[in-house]
Image (cartoon, rainbow, N blue to C red):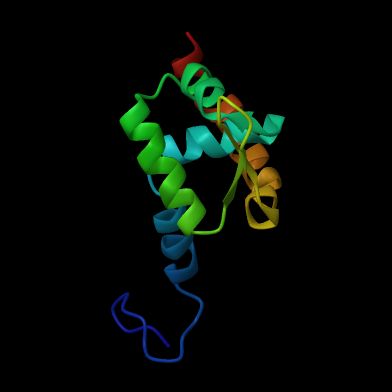
Length: 114
């Protein structure tokens, strides 16, 4: 039971799961990349162009998303070496969540579209 808004040990109805999830999804750039990869596997430079992220930022974000298990990296050894990124099953599981956020934004954030 909560006292003065504080959670008591054993009370799992609080915001902890939401906070943990948002910490994993983290930054604007992580969300942009996850949203962009919903279209399918992309090369690094394709992601760079479609997200407008700098190479340094994109590299850092992709490394973070790989470490968290949202993104997989595949290397083609042919010359020139090509690196491809795609969503893992964990990343794919965010598809309905991102869709709901997009629907909410379409309804409630009209000012951004003007």
